[in-house]
Image 1 (cartoon, rainbow, N blue to C red):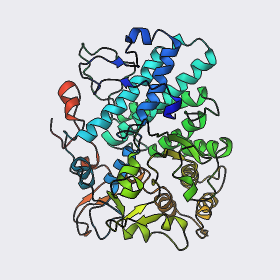
Image 2 (cartoon, rainbow, N blue to C red):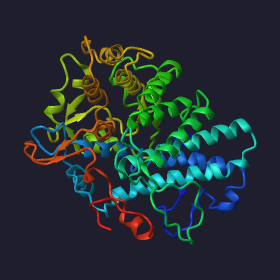
Image 3 (cartoon, rainbow, N blue to C red):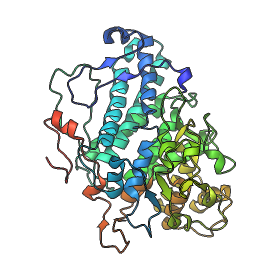
Image 4 (cartoon, rainbow, N blue to C red):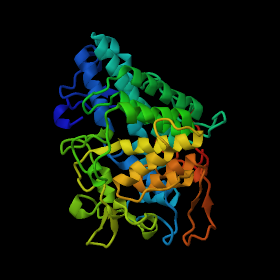
Length: 464
């Protein structure tokens, strides 16, 4: 989705799902919404604009990755893997697990995700304008993929975690099944359950997998949908589903691991390992992974999020991943080398993750679909020039996820799905432990949403 290949149609959607502004589909000529949506070209432009919405910094341009790390790190400087030293107070709230309902950064991400959902719904609601049945099917698939992606991160950040083996009736997020064009009427609505939101996500991704082609340029294809489905199933503890989806991507997508670990990062053209990436250019989008993880010389803010010794000590010797970092000469902070190009794509799904999902799911299920868990883990380790393991446990696989996928947006989600805890005591003595389902690890429903939506329930700990 390179900007110079796009019609730069940005959906000027509502700032929140229940505010009272009108939705403006606002192309260059500012034509009326009814005119824009009356033609196939107009509906196609809306779909292109939906991809463009994902590239913003407060969504999939990098910041959603950062949130997962900020929520997942411990509070002890002696034991934490990573440290936040930035000056953004709203992000520090996440790091300290002291978030407020008027946090404007959280508000912005909540709004952006619903803008993506509303734009995707707009495409689906007006798909009858597309006459070619094959093209229509692909567009429906892409819209469902993007909508599922947004719902997945909304429900992971703004709701209590999905717990396998039970009916997940805990409050999720508001489901908007159709596009909203006018907000003069009361759009107040209660949040659906976590179970209901996950059903929307899974159904959307299955439809996307069915409709999408095997190759679709830099847009979502069927294996992007299958890979995201593998991630969703893993979060649910549906290990058979996660295993089979990941195996399908590994065996049939044509994606390959990059020849070296370093080659998997810092490129502005999708590489063989990239299953789905957000395209960033100088014209559109902001690579906020670069902004917050990198030095000034590499386009960042100096390394607001830095690596501590505790993380580096988790690697064996040799391991290329242990050295995939550098010291910022300006302040001495150790920073990751994953985001040193400020105009590089933001990778959301790499093939390496599929190997890790297949390994964990096979081991937990007692199966050997596609490969043994040990062989899958050693494939990942061999690429990094790390020694092979002779046996593998669940703890080994979870550690391998930390080593391979560190600072890529997985930390809090892995902690929550595996029911681990976070020590936020400053001296690491265990005096202040947050369990995986703690109220403090859930984002507040933004104040502007609760002010406008009279039926919505706020998360515990954030007032009425």
